[in-house]
Length: 457
Image (spheres, rainbow, N blue to C red):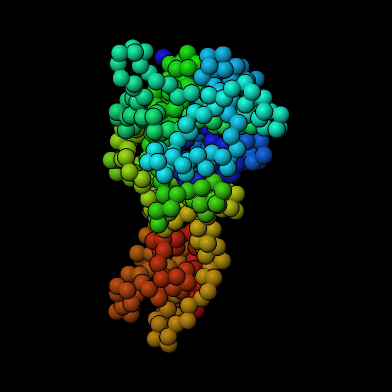
């Protein structure tokens, strides 16, 4: 069996880190099993779905390193769903209902007062032809419900309404269909809710594994019943835990909370996002993987916790710094060029500053300091100013090599008696305008003697 997975968001907003978690779980599972990844847009909600959101989702996935084998749109597949509806009607498991929302709400309240679960009572199954004709003459159009099954065929056995499956993430799972209303699959206006197109597409596209958030566990019980009604074997299901904000709030595409777009614009590296999105809430240590191949080696769906996990953006910066500190010049070259950092100095400059960066774009400030001097020159006391004047008088002649900083500070120490912080801090402030930063032994050769002298206070 070829492993085939899918990521199926509705294009009604920008995807967030929680959506990315689902996409990455599927992508890494496909990678580890030499399988296929289908990008499917569940865009049957024509009013709210927008192509611009679909395009942005694809862009975000590509940025993360996910490149689907196939991209599908449900809005282009209505004929297939229509055919499935006719099959379910012919099997007498899809039935017409004429209740208004107000009538359904009243019935739920009545059932609660009687101590019954507030599920649909299947009253539509007892409608007479005359009642149906009366509803239709009043202009009512039906919505269509799927008749949840009783799986027991032996009349001598008690009714069994439980659905069981071995979840790829959570292990043995059970959903009791008796606690659920027969789901509406088709609205009054003929449009489809999520449930039916999802099942039909999973069948038609040969989806072998469905990996998604654990908010779908109950829905899976219903969908397994629909798979069976359509004569198909259900795929293997896996339900990972959800991510929340630090305060415990759920994530939403509509609010833009922790959207991939906002993280990218904030200078976060894709592998920082991917590493944290995949590894948080699992038994694996959260470390920054260099690429998705490395991350796949740490990925095990069964290692995922069953409880929700809080996603702390501050952890992204920890991972981001790790990635910056180990990024080769070859990896950074093109992006540095776009930022105006190029030429013979670019590579030694990158190797000098990368250990002090939170984001790659932070290199611009250091490039400016290197070539233009401190952006805000320090205000030195008289004693430090005298010390610096003496220090700059001792600046070695060119040519310079990698030992120039050591040679220079050695001469300063001998001449002034200063050492440690009283020696190094005034020099750092004079050369960079900052109290911390890259090793001056790496920066000084790039400044050159003339550039260094220009920083004399």
